[in-house]
Amino acid sequence: MRGLLLRVSVAFGLLALWEGLPRIGLVNPNFLPPASDVARTLWRLLASGELLRHARVSLDRILLGLAVSILVGVPLGIFMGSWKTFERTLDGPLQAGRQVSAIALFPVFILFFGIGELSKVVIIFWASVWPILLNTTIGVKTVDPVLIRSARSMSARGATLFRKVILPAAAPAIFTGIRLGAAYAFMVLVAAEMIGANAGLGFLVLNSQEVFKIPEMYAAIVALAAFGLGVNKLLYHLERRATVWREAGGT
Amino acid sequence: MQPSIDIRNVSKSYGGGPAPDGLLALDDVSLQIGQGEFLAILGPSGCGKSTLLHVVAGLTPARGELSVHGKKVTGPGLDRGVVFQDYALFPWRTVLDNVAFGLEMKKVPRHLRAARAFRYVTMVGLAGFADRYPAQLSGGMKQRVAIARALAFDPEVLLMDEPFAALDAQTREILQAELLRIWEQTGKTILFVTHSIDEAVFLAQRVVVMTARPGRIKQIVDIDLPWPRVDSDVRSSRPFALLRHRIWELLAEEVEKAQHSASPMAPGRSRGDVAADAAAQEVV
Image 1 (cartoon, rainbow over the protein chains, first blue to last red):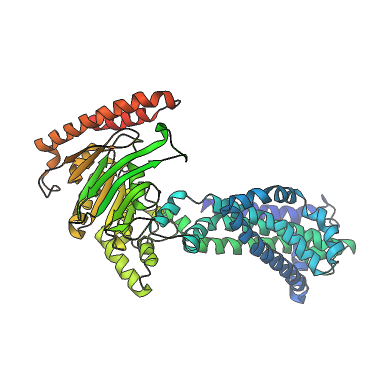
Image 2 (image 1 turned 90 degrees about the horizontal axis):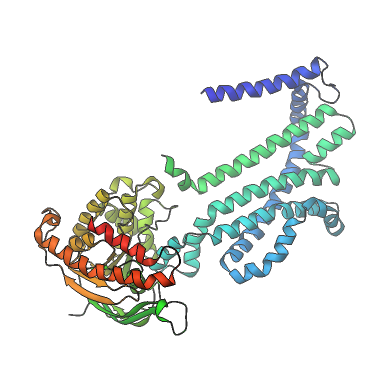
């Protein structure tokens, strides 16, 4: 209860600073408008539907890029986790690939896939596939051998062993990879939308700055934060529902 | 009568190729276990007693001949239920679903599974915990679940690999008594590996004492203590003490041997030390 009170007061304190500093002129209000101005702008953008239009575009890109990452990363990771030779063969190129920043590759993607949606989905894919791939591989590799032995003693093998034991045992690690991947996806999404886009929250941030609609810019940044928080929360709840047994210890 | 488990000239060596003596885990073990018999295998640590159990379970391939109820063992099968020392429950499954695992493997129709699993959950005294997850259970409860899981698919024999070694003394005694009750109730053949002389004498009809590595059968001791053993405080009786001492002497020789042979091959803490510890625990 006291913790909650403290957290709420800290949040209000920060908001008060944001409101007060520009008002008394300690910070140039042209560069940082008071919180209430930004809130009003945010409301206006919401009411006009403009914010939702941009958010929708961003969400589509994230979901598509992340979906491809999951579809590629999870099966490949499972393969690498369960087949040593395969993992060793691919390890070098994959480690190298992982080190290449997605943003550095964006010009390459634009060259190949144009300035449209495809290059944005590809960059999101590139950024988010690595944590998914890595965590899946490790998750599958580190399944407790005791569990496998136990399932084998009850004559489980092959696909059944995989479906009933290896996959559920690796699920927490896979989910962690997906959440990490989503976080990376957000970072590159904003960057990608600033380089070549005419819609999306990242575009809204940069475009508002360029036409000097500073409250709009902050409104878009706040919206981006809320959006990211929302997606993370959603994934977190999905994860908890799928791995409810991990929480069970406390009760 | 046909034995329940028939082990003939089984040898197991690790490391491939013609094994040097040090890598031989089991050396020409032959053993017949009768139907409904409770047999304990006792030996110094590293003597291969767990290996022997894993060979019977079909989890470890070995040379020699092995059959369960007349059927040659070529791999794991649902005619044998295994209980491991570290419970090996699936943490993402509830108690009931853990117990139902073997039933799924046996392709028991879905609508029959829950009732059947629940019957065994009840048998081990966990009816009120059927929908809990393993993380919510104590060690003793987990091992009860593991026993229920191994019984639920109705195997011919139960193979138990030091199942109570990780439990505290009190829980261990309670579970030993429970196991005897379940054994009497189900009439299963039980092959029970342990390093505790006390446990072996209390539970078994026969105790197989194994030699230090490579594992051979040193002697088979008949435990002619009266039944039922649970309520009569058989542990305090004179015959119990005599049997215990006799087996202790058999084992002490092996522990000493293991110590001598182990010292040059293993750096640091040798297998012999571990075995000596195990035996020392029994003395106090």
